[in-house]
Image 1: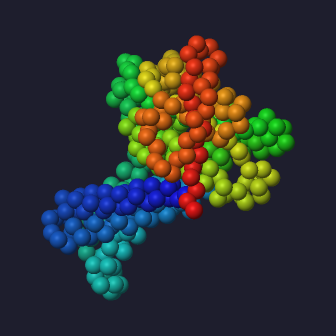
Image 2 (image 1 turned 60 degrees about the horizontal axis):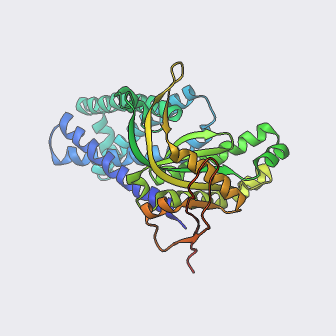
Image 3 (image 1 turned 135 degrees about the vertical axis):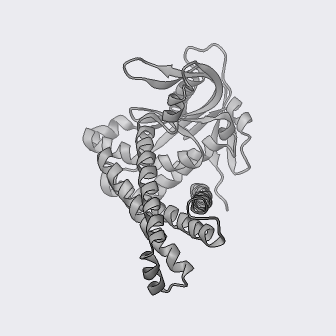
Length: 344
């Protein structure tokens, strides 16, 4: 199953188009409205986005455990270098790869102005972008902007899906590896599950020891049964990286999850340290379903109510399980075990 790669490829293509179009617009606005300036901006935008994406893949992952100020400095520097390189390459392409013409053109005062504007704009945008990204890392995706806008000042109801996912046999694994190495494994696992969460437009709500709670809005969650696809994408990525896990830890992380959906109240919680909290019976139910998942020795258990809302496709195999009465509940809950149908 290559759903994660396909989703990311689509997002990458959209990013290329948006970056190129926006840069072309600003190029025409600041330099002058002409076909050549628009094409120059379009090519520059394409290359900047491509360079930064490559940087994220090959460099950023290697720095993910460094301090945030180093990340900020390196990322900003990469943006500046990428913008300078993209401007040079765009001029080279537009001049038919005649480097002499480009070098002569770079001496022109107007070109100096273009480069200085581009570098200054790129530095300011990069710095702002990465400061916001740092806060997103701490608070969650897009939460900073929503907090500043007062989005969570007054609690409100919304419908969401939640997936409670945790490692199997985590206590034995921690004893075997030791706490430091076990924490390293958790960080690697959480890093690997980030890609499917992003690809399915989910949000990591909270890390709870050896588990994580992932959430989707009802709109995003019902799109191609996103929570279910996310789980199987994570399994695909972990399987693909099995050699790396075995080399470093001698173990392949095994995990299970439960998915449920419904109405929650969303708002700010706390005074000295604030966080965005989801409150409602949906979370309690999902947490207790995860315990049932462990008891039944299943990989993924989903409530029938959530399945009906997601309407999974034929590639999702659903096995109806006997109804269960969860701890603290009176009414039985209809649940199903879910698996991915491997194409023959």
